[in-house]
Length: 360
Image (tube, rainbow, N blue to C red; front, side):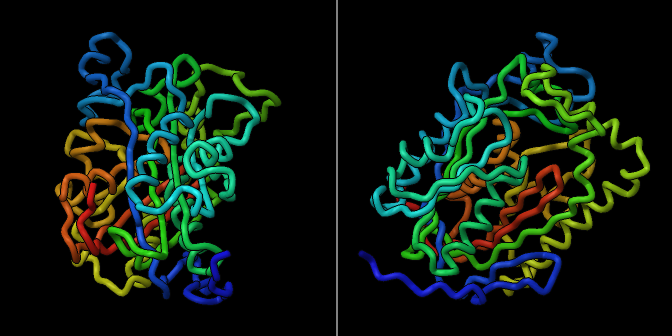
């Protein structure tokens, strides 16, 4: 049995502010990343086929990853296996698996995380499903970092997987500024070493904004009552109510608060950040984007990748970081801000320092 650090719930944590942070007092690393994506469909072809309505044209996407008969968990497993192999850590040594998703996981009422864990790292890992819409992957990152910081474990595998299949979901028209892509992603975390050191993570919430996802709809008692799911209708309905007043400003304020706190806890100024990985959503037409709101340029973002695959549910951040590492777009010493936003609303971020070039 490996000797473990005695858990210390107070080390490296801050609970005095609205933003819950983990200041990493021990070395925690991104050991590896991986992405499993199906072939992409040209957006121009989808528009020509009449699949995309007017409000969703001109957003800047070139193509969208579209799976054909492959479920989200299967793509999560594919990415997870690659991440484990790249990490250099034996599968049997992984202690925690957190699986995040946004959409249907292939079966009603089953433990997706247990399946992903068994197919990637084995029977021994504690496995849990974690959902917070598009912020699911970064929420898992924040929680897994806290788990390792506390001394409860030394390794964790984080996966995401989504397939936005018709007719239950309309990938082209279901959310503002968003075309949804399919895929699986994974990140391995370890206290033993890796390609990037985690300097700090942060999570923040404004639960008073949850109505944008519910839209005053009555609760149902079985899934599949409407197809496709009327996500955009709910948002627009809520936006016309008094409860939505100042909603967009509150979302932006929460994003900035999360950014400022994670940078502060990492001990770095924003001008030290080389690249920023944000959700793959885009307003297009020269309008201000999320990366602009956080003070970054398009060149610092990974929109060049996001525009080719679409919004990957909970996995944009893991896929974006994998893209940067695989292409060699970040060098030793570079700092990367990884940032998630999920309708609900939750926000999560991490500051990473690249410490070595990946060997994959």
